[in-house]
Length: 311
Length: 311
Image (cartoon, rainbow over all chains, first blue to last red; front, side, top):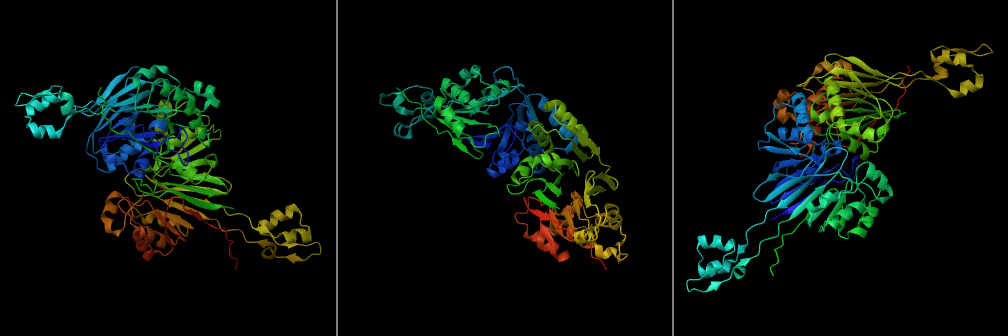
């Protein structure tokens, strides 16, 4: 069961010939969540062979053009493709008006419905939930209201080992009980302990998306022990002051957040186009947090399923 | 002296992984004219190493998203790059409001001025002129008001052959007269005929951009004998009816226009994403007009200077 991130764009505000504007896609069990939608996202989706139609939820962190100017074209293409399934957009409420404005003026009647869910950028909120996953938004520290997103897989029931079901012909009502933690008593009266009957459930996997933001320790409790943390690193330390004044982060700051949050893996991105090479970002970040990687357009990060360890 | 077209995008409404949305750049003596600005144009400019800063004039044919949704990001990037020179935009007046709306809501104060020049889509008009070139707009036949553009180099004076200037020490006042067609009388009284003194001027070069449009013979007189004609060919003849109802053209129709207008070269583009290969477009068009080429992203078409032939 997949929990897999694809980076569609890794540049900051100015795209380059190699780095597109911010957009990520998270595949959770073949449901696709689009996170930010910079100009060019629809082409990046195609290049990365992600089927448009599988995206039903779009999350926009904030309303700077490099994070959402691609949405107008994407919505328009959905219409041309004859999309019928509902599309849900989670963003600052100002986007709702802009989408209406553009549709009213430049689009024909859409073939599908859009449901707009305004995000409150001032507090942590559960903004979406299905049977597999919950999505939270939380405040970041930027020039304009900006939200981070946390995608959290739900804890599932433990699996009963098939050989026991067959061996003891365990009836369905008992299976439910065992999944909830009960032991099982055989017809002969023998007690089989729950631990022996079941495989422990998989650990819920978590992905946190933090862009754009200045250094902000307030987010640490929310993203604690996250499997995969994306944190922007627009600058290196040589531009720490500029990072501060523009409410962006340096590679070191991103890595410090990862270290303090005990994240398992850090991806940095949103690199300023002023840097021709990004080796220095990695070097700087790894001093603070070893398991750091630099986002590249098209890179895929899988989080594997892992069973919870029992004592 | 360059007169050179670069195709930045050759797809119709849906971009593909190989074809971006419509945008052309015409380089006239190192002044760059951007024609249409579909999503992704700014990245295509970078990939084709066209310097953003050299574009001072943007022409938008019509307000379907695939022809102008890239302008918001481009204008934003100009601001981030600290552009100071004026930018002129020629488009249907509805775009003026949309640009204001987006700037008001999502942009900071721009570092440069935008001058908006509304196009009257119902008639032929001279919309821009400098010492080298004139640009005309003219009506096309599409679902919404749509304009084609004709870029026409100005006729220059003939060049006086340097060897005569040196040999006879011709004074400046006489040089002006000779350029206007006078013969020259030497100090010894000998008449040197103008034809001998001068090289004939270069033929003014012309490029016509015709997208999106149904088959429309009304444009033929305007684009007569144009050096380079870009005419959309969204469909092949197998979809002629669909071309008609959507106000687009087939490859054959585009070529018929080129033939009837006695164009020198035809480029077809705006191919529907339904066609995986475009060989059939070329085949179909060349039956009508041999000198046809299929637009490819990144393709460059130079029009060489050629002196007018004297009898």
